[in-house]
Image (cartoon, rainbow, N blue to C red; front, side, top):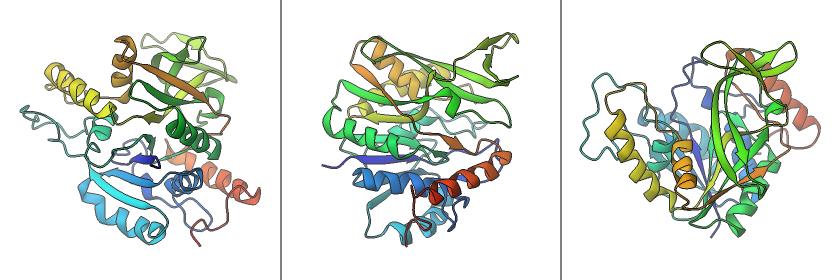
Length: 300
C-alpha cells in the first residue's frame, strides 16, 4: 500500500496575516503546497489528506480538486475544537486550535497506512519527499518513526526570528530530544537562539532541525489520543496551550516505545513566516523552474 501525505493546513496564519496556505507563488499560480504534492506524487505517495478548518473547505476544494483529480486520491479532515476532548468542555475563551498533534489525531479515521506529515506553508524539496517515501515503504513500523532533519542554515528568515525544533541524535542517528528554540535569528552573520532572559547562544548552520516533516505508522493515533487526554487534564484551562507533535514523540522516546530516525536532507527549505518572505519564495521557485527541477506549470 502506498504511503499517504497528511498536510496540516488548519493554522491561523497569525504572523503572516492572511490565508497563506492558498496564496499563489509559482510562475503559473501554484501555491507552496502544490510543490509538496507534486514532489509527493513523483516520490510514490498514493493519497493526500488535508487537515483544514471547515470554514475554508470550499476554498481548498475549488483550488485543489481540479488539479489533483485523476492524479492522486484526496481526502479532507476538519480540525474541530471539540474533537477527541472526551468529556472536557472547551473553554469559551479558547479560539486557538489545539495544536499540530491534535490535527494529526483528527485524521485517525482517514489513514490506515504509513504516512508523512507536513505543514501546508513550507517548501520541503524533492530530496526530502524521496527519502520520506523510502522510509515509509521500507522501514516504518509501530516502533519505528522518523523526522526529516534540515540543516538549520537552510531554514532561517532574513526578516525576523523563527522557531525551530533543534534535534539531538545518538550514534545510530535516532532522535534523543527536540529542543524547541522559539527565537532563532541571524546576528552579525552568526545564527543564534535567544533565551527568555535575553542571553544569546550560537548554533552551527549544519545543526539538524525539525521543520515538522514526520514519518509515522498508524499506531501513532492511539498514542496521540492517550497523550491528548493527559494534555487536556493538565491544560484545559489554558487558552494558549497547544498539543504539539514533539510532545507525542518525546513520550514515545522517553518511555522506550520505539525509535525515531533522523533522516538528513540537503534540501533548501523556505516558507512564508513573514509577508516580507513572499518575494524570496517566488524568486526561489522561479529559479528551481529555470533549473529544470520543476515544470513551469505543475499541473498542465
